[in-house]
Length: 418
Ligand SMILES: [Zn+2]
Image 1 (tube, rainbow, N blue to C red):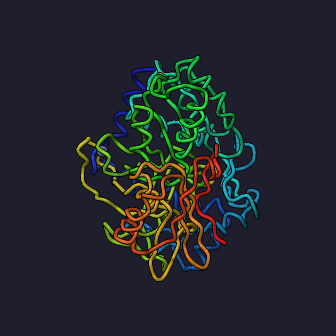
Image 2: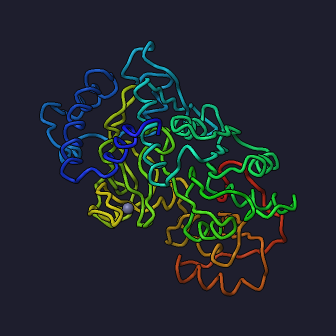
């Protein structure tokens, strides 16, 4: 951090006592509901349609009375119809959404950029990333949120920043070697690709100065994490966050005890809902619904994120954090496969494949489910048995020679529907 005072502020917010979290949450929740009602025609109309008297919204328990916000609502709002501030207060935009259809635009005020940075600083604090680190930022600098999110915080702490952006893996490795990069920020599948290219270049990735990785933007399994950590001899952190909530690093972070993701409850309310939108109990798996409590340009109320998780517990973690803990993201609702009555996500299959050292795979869903992987055919009986036992179905397995499956420098596309 630039000053001890700022570091103290970050520390205090990470370790807020439950009682204080609840007070801040309730206060900000009441305020944000009034704020969107007054400043966002979309919410004003939506609340009116649902006969909601905003004065009757007193505590976070009243949240269930409010309607959900969907990605389609955000698409319909293109370019800035859900924005709560005038254009003169906007300092930047980022974009979310697929490659097709209407883009989803997220505007930021100066306060929003600061909020993004502050949340990322909490992650840096927990991961003990300091001004002594050399931070290589491999997500793109552009409308997607990855690059800038890491950059704002890395710049703030006066670290040695390498804002290299996406692609050109050989160059990435050259820079890691020549500048002794200690922290790599990347999509979760990228390190595996980096290791492969390094090998082609005759470089052992264990010899690099890398100590930590902040990996996100796609669901990845615990087994894949083990592979990455042992390949590189690093600690790999899962960093959640979505553009709609302000970008990478905003919603929470995991601590070294790895019980799940701690959600920054003074900034976000998280609910887990079923397909009907009903809130589920602790431990039950469903879709994450976020409410941003502290954003200015476009706060979202009960936003259906498409991310699948479950509340682990609401108690204090061993690390001392009293913010809510949820499971690491298992998948996205779009990537859910239902086959012969069994629901699964690509990360479930990855978990098994990675446990046999497999790094590259593809799941094809059509008439049946076919799992392509790079590795020995001899593994098939074991893999089949594990998938049947732990996921609950029998796919067709196809072993392929090394290099047969497409490689990605950004988000990996593991699931193909034919
Ligand atoms: Zn913890």
